[in-house]
Image (cartoon, rainbow, N blue to C red; front, side):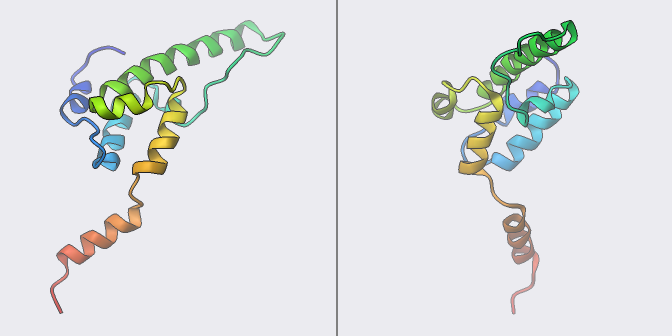
Length: 122
């Protein structure tokens, strides 16, 4: 992934365990610019099926390369302690699934907190 001004977003807003929703939004912005957002959601194919066409082979190799690049960006945009928890994961989709299970705040909780904060006391 090229070093561009968008990657500065992730460098200045590293995932620290409490900012998952904001971090994920920023990560998607950066990866969308590089056309690599799909790596977050699609599990990485482990092997290339026997008798694959040349086009399938190119797609497989591109997926492997995109996963490697995105994994580096994801890990680099975390604090060191959190990096250590996910460093052994090879597939970005598995990292993202685990992070969602552990850190995601459902939108309804965010909306409720915002409504409560801006509602006049009764």
